[in-house]
Amino acid sequence: MIHRPALSVVIPCFNEEACLPELHKRVSAAAHAVVGADHEIILVNDGSRDRTWEVMKALAATDPLLVCINLSRNHGHQLALTAGLDLCGGDNILIIDADLQDPPELLGPMLEAMKAEGADVVYGVRRKRAGETLFKKVTAAGFYRLLSRLTDIDIPLDAGDFRLMSRRALDALLALPEQARFVRGMVAWIGFTQRPFLYDRAERFDGESKYPLSKMIKFALDAVTGFSTAPLRFASHAGMALVGVSLVMLAYILFGWFSGRAVAGWTSTMLIVVVLGAAQMFVLGMIGEYLGRLYMESKRRPLYIVADIAGSARPPHRLGHVAAQAEITAASETPGGSGSAPSA
Ligand code: UDP
Ligand code: MG
Image 1 (cartoon, rainbow, N blue to C red):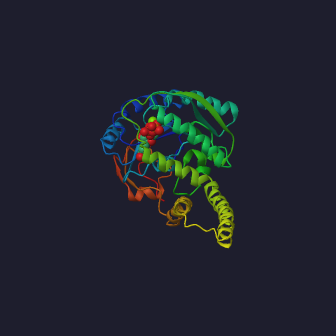
Image 2 (cartoon, rainbow, N blue to C red; image 1 turned 45 degrees about the vertical axis):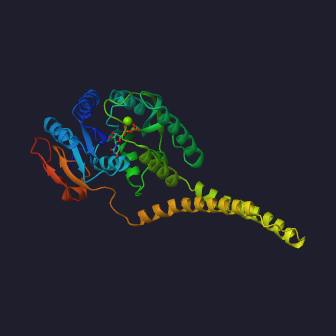
Image 3 (cartoon, rainbow, N blue to C red; image 1 turned 120 degrees about the vertical axis):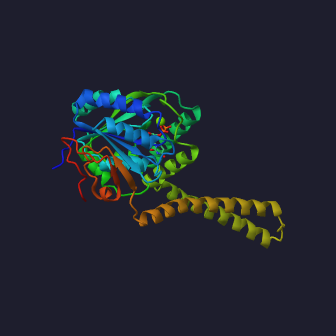
């Protein structure tokens, strides 16, 4: 039987070579302070273009509690996170970013809050966001408020993926099969007792945000389409309103024709063509967003592909099918570890 560590820390990393040594040091210290050596740290390399994977392998050689997973390419933050969550085995799971914006030292207080309140999820709520651009803060604030108006479930405002979860909450989360994953919304959806934990978000330890505008837009669209059909409803309402408008116009046109006062109005014609054209494109685009996602979901592809695993002194609990496809580097003979990956 595989040992279940008391804690798994799951960290998706994309081009974070400069953050990793400090990240490892602080996360490891925080985990040791709370559960001693009964933990695992899972770093997921999301197809980085810098030396992230090399740095991970070097770190894995120094720490038997570190498991590094190399995805076959950049799958995006939410899927990299999912890979780590899928493969971790802990009784409690901490999700944290690689850039140290979320202080690992809060692990202790979060675990206490979890126990004290009997919660299954303790999620970080950002009180302050240091070192982020005004654009990021304004769009994030607007986005979370819009999202909460569009969706039926309560996705917490100003919360990221920084959170502590119980095993049963994680298992519930992993039972959701969708490809377009908006993890923080999915966690809200599973229910159980969830408690906010206020904290101040620090500046990035090094480098720049790995979320350019294009990724932010995809993220926002996944969130909205994944949790709400309000835009589709809006599309049909807008369609109905346009039908109403066109009926009025029809009456006007017929009146003009019967009264013999019809004028060849180029301006009004163009206006109607342009406005209706734009409205139709907008509505079609919205339907297309859903249709595209439906199409992608229907393929039922795996969510991510693992290329290598390094430093699995204690092989990730649910390695399952990925063990076969992944090349396991430094497959360990470390005492205490079960040596090889479990088969599916
Ligand atoms: N990240 C990732 N894949 C990506 C983009 C980002 O794994 O394609 C990771 C990144 O390394 C970090 C986390 O996701 O650990 C959040 O990214 P970032 O800090 O750049 O986002 P921000 O805090 O600016 O929203
Ligand atoms: Mg960040």
